[in-house]
Picture 1 (tube, rainbow, N blue to C red):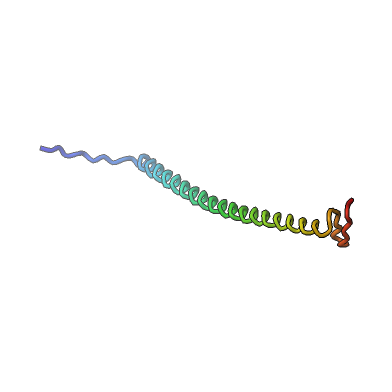
Picture 2 (tube, rainbow, N blue to C red; picture 1 turned 90 degrees about the horizontal axis):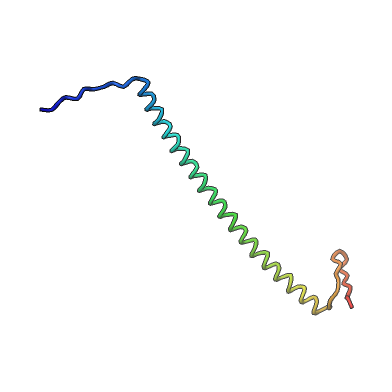
Length: 94
């Protein structure tokens, strides 16, 4: 023989407390999701910045090589000296 369970009705205050707790969980979960999305976007932006930085560093290295080659060629042609870029006059040093 099984005993029939007696049903108990919670008070409105108890129900409100449970609903409030559930809503708090939902809010925290949503905020965690939003933070994770923001973190993901930030990581993508950081990766993009890193890629741009690498590209610019490579470009800088190429420019540095080009400059060295130009200076070497001019030094071979004219010797050591000073160049006034505004006038284009090269003054050899002794």
